[in-house]
Length: 253
Image 1 (cartoon, rainbow, N blue to C red):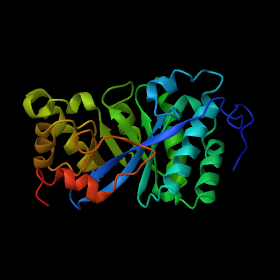
Image 2: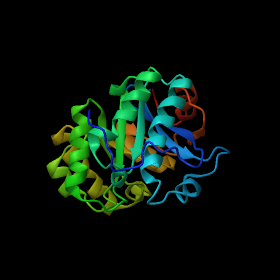
Image 3: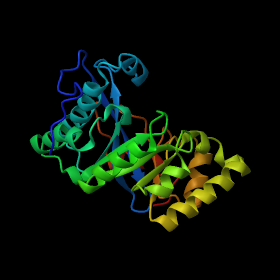
């Protein structure tokens, strides 16, 4: 694997970070499909406060530190399912070289790299060709890939036409109030058909109400994530009994 000499990813981050973990559920098997690692301050400060410290100078080391910290903490907490990690595409200078610390961390902490999902958000404007290069490299190395907040950002269907990730996470603004909004329901139906034909897992994120949960469940959505199911837990992993116990009164196993 090539070494990258054009970024500062090996420079220690000048501030400490921690992680919260939010479960992603598989409603067909009533199991936890994955945990999404969400950056936090060491005292539980929100992601916004942490991200406000990210600059052009430290973004490479921040991205690498988030990856390795998520893997370390998940491993220490006994994570035995998939781990979803967000990455900043503009903090990936050379995809293969930027993976070396991730692979080293997975090996060091005994976490199977095949269980790692890399999520890219559409919030950050970036050259589609660069995202394609990153995704194809990650896929070739055996990692799972996901497009987060699909439909909110810059690439959308154009990116999907060129690369089919393992998972598409529908933007929470589409999910919000979907049980009462015919326009959102029509868009969702189209996306459900597209992902089914392309063999992509469709994940509804940001599920916050019983109405949203019930509508999506009745439409056959298998994978969900959101406050209605379980809030992110700081430095803790929710277990299946805890998560599905809360859903028992709404969901017939």
